[in-house]
Length: 115
Image (cartoon, rainbow, N blue to C red; front, side, top):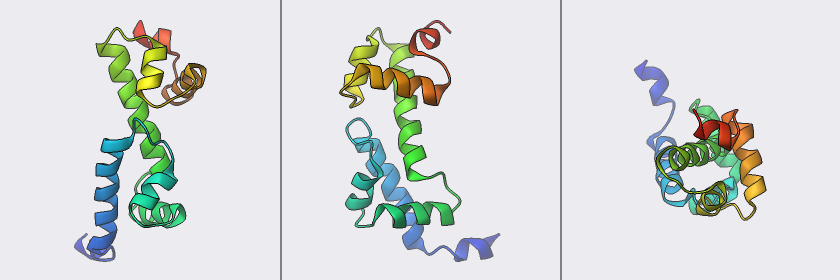
């Protein structure tokens, strides 16, 4: 097991850690891989390759999952409307947020609220 870890220099693990920190700070405003890649001085393709090499989900998937998780938290723990949540999470169009939520959570907002 330690052999396989040595194939991945600390620099690559560092990129993943830094991405995670950046994501936590910026996911409400930044939904595009290119933002995170630029912040890490990498191209989006290089960033995706590093994650693939380390057998991590793609950066785009991690961004999406973080937004969905936060949306679920808002829906579960607050009385905010879907429109308010959409704006909190950086969606300019509440309808786009609703489609995004249904697509990636498997349920629509009102169904999720009633669970």
